[in-house]
Length: 134
Image (cartoon, rainbow, N blue to C red):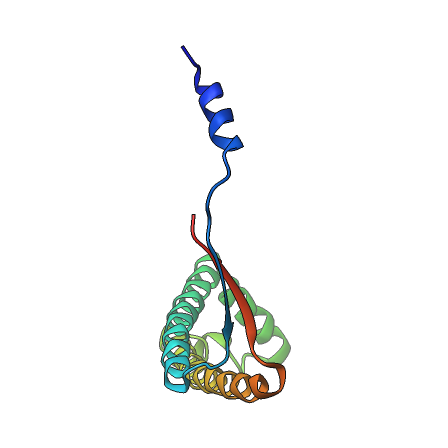
């Protein structure tokens, strides 16, 4: 009878017939890069909106806004209150504007990177990628 350890030792001593393929990445499709960067930007936009709203809720729950109102009131003779400018609708609007700007910037950046890579391939010859089958 052989043990599991003997079987594993016998198996590891055998050489696997893994085939290797080396391919050269010489072109990135422009529209594929734009679509992929747009999807990544949508995910980042959702994370941005949710995280800013969560930070607002934490700050409001801990009472930091009211404490900042008290401090600013002492300094400005109650002429300015932070809570009138920092409420949930303003936070949602700000996070939506930031998310939309990030959406546009990230999508354009993906397109620019694909274009630059396609131009650089003409000089460098592309990226060599190796694949293996197990």
